[in-house]
Image (cartoon, rainbow, N blue to C red; front, side, top):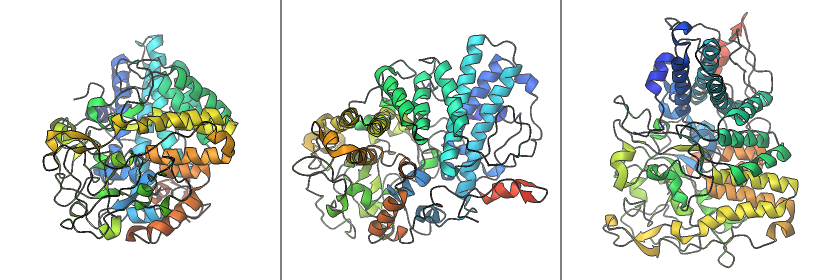
Length: 594
């Protein structure tokens, strides 16, 4: 068990003592504990642990509280951020989890259970942070230093939960520790309040923490800068990012940096490293009831068929995504506008017993840490066989996920097989340092500092270009456990942008290159849809995606992004119905969904 993992089971018990705002916002809880029992330092610290524990999103999937399944509120954003953003197909087949299809194609209505589960999970987190602050105010045995730290951690977490709510639904009700009427309207822009929470945390959290899973000053600063970026406050965000890049350290005191190898970010034995700015801590085999602590929200996202994982074939990288990794054979740079004119060869329609030779053209090496491709090593599990591990190629395409997969050599520690689908101890990186560098590059480009923007982008590309972090062929294809050879698994060729490229290309070119780099670096990590929305490019990018991908796979043939509507998801109808006051709903639906 990871020392940095917090304790959700205990927090669920303690977290019941105050009103819950996760579903019936105006209904009091029954059979709860008196606040006086835990109005002390120990009680407040336990409540804070409970607020961290809600990061895993499982509270939104508690069926005893009217929630749905674990994957509906996954904190990784695989449905709402990656599938809806074109990084991935839903996967599996059309009959399995059909509620994802309308989300991916932007024709969903407010009754979709995925929305209600996500809403409940995030407001459960809000409730827990507010409980911390309310009881802290009553505790008399807490030192001033601890009071400030606890307040700052709670407000950091509240900022996170509200940030997620804001980017999903835009106008959402604000509830804090001073709220007395738990049925507020969603009629104000809460960005200033989210900003204030992160600003307080940045100014008051310590630079290091006793447990590495806790937020520190620099994680708060990065989240504050990200919040400013989402508000297009580029100058203030730029200044913060510069300070973080130059001086920031992890909660354990390690200076922020890119890891030597790209895949270090997805291996439990190497996580909580210099690149981890803030991560949701996962742990396998610690809950006898199932993999609730082991990234349960992504338990569907493993190869299917006769794979060693058994279930369930979801979250397949899209053909469009994989094509982004083609590089120019002369320059080693990406095709920013014409990547789909240079498609990566795939095995669509090729049976597993039919010979297949993988693409022999030049590729960005991050492709093979992001997407499982036929004929390429699948970590240390053997050569990825393609069709035998795919549930329905015609629906979801030929590729499999990779960043969320544990290695065979460490599966006893990293896999949780206590349920019908796997869990893992792979942390989810809410913010990692590569993300910080690329957000900073965006701010620099917006400010006209194109040389600095290029420096940050090249720092990310330099790591990808270092052969130490590439995927290599096995020494013996029939026996992968014998280890890897010195022969790259594909024709990897990637270069940094030559000096002066961004300056000569101008701001528009620089931003295009930065946006593209985020696609390559952060693919399948839940960011893409929300990036497209904040850039104002979602309509063109996603409709182009539907037009291309829809000709190749059947899952997105109904896809259409509608400007002025599709930027935000519908407020769950369940929550609107529960907000009735005098027969009139207090919560208002987002534009286009009425």
